[in-house]
Length: 120
Image (cartoon, rainbow, N blue to C red; front, top):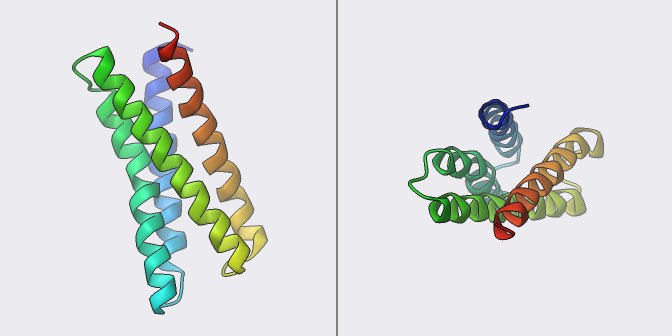
């Protein structure tokens, strides 16, 4: 797969991931505790794709790398919030596990991209 094809497919994957995060967050109850988590996971879960899109429009390699690192950080934060939701047992494991798996795969992708850039 060529870089442009990979980038386009990853952007689509991240948009779908963001939509799944929004749907998950909107399913949380409207209590103060849930609202805090809902806000945090909505921010980080949608930011991964937004920053990756910006990375693909970067003005330099350094700019690309910085935005990739932001995407990596946001993916890690999203995984944290999903783990917290899981630990609190707010969502069934059957519904949460696929999303947690996707978050960890996305995190691994950005970690690999950042590492490959660091070697250059």
